[in-house]
Image 1 (tube, rainbow, N blue to C red):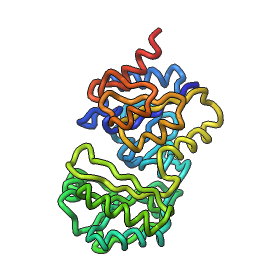
Image 2 (tube, rainbow, N blue to C red; image 1 turned 90 degrees about the vertical axis):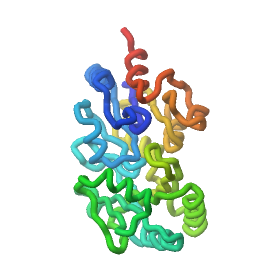
Image 3 (tube, helix red, strand yellow; image 1 turned 120 degrees about the horizontal axis):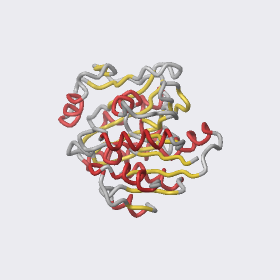
Length: 276
């Protein structure tokens, strides 16, 4: 069986975060015909399931950049978290730059009750993001940021130069103990600096998904648009970039689609690739 794994934002989702009726139809048809379809996203499991409502989800999802692989029934398959002591050191380094992070994680990996901690002292970029999450039940405001038991993702937001300086300090001080990813936010004019467990990326998560599927897969096909998809591209049999992908991503792709995410590029490929 063929496995298809797609990024969400700016790849499978439209820019308004919707799934078109056409994309939903093609996805469900492919699942019914026996293909294995899943996602690999920086978003949380809870939010991913909300955004993908109406799609047939039969196999685990890769979420939080790869820190959490879990079934659609919210059963954990792989959890790659930063331990509390290391997370506390990351928070301390951030304070040297006068910024506190968001922390997404769990108190218990057996129960996927995600928490999204945020500092009460927010910069303007963080304020914009939190306003968009205001009805999210995971949100917890903290007077003083402190780690969870399982810290899946520690995220800073700010100007690109500031985030590069912070990333340099984290790498220099922690010396390989964490994975860092710096990227432009697709919706807010700022940069995200994401700090993960060294195995908490999409590339490792794809390996964990394949291990879970136990050899059922004959070919691995992945879709993406951004830098955090490149590791996954290198592991796939076929790497497919949407038309609106970053130049660096297109350079790593085997196929560059003629359509963007807003033109249902992934669904068009799936539909055309299997045209009877």
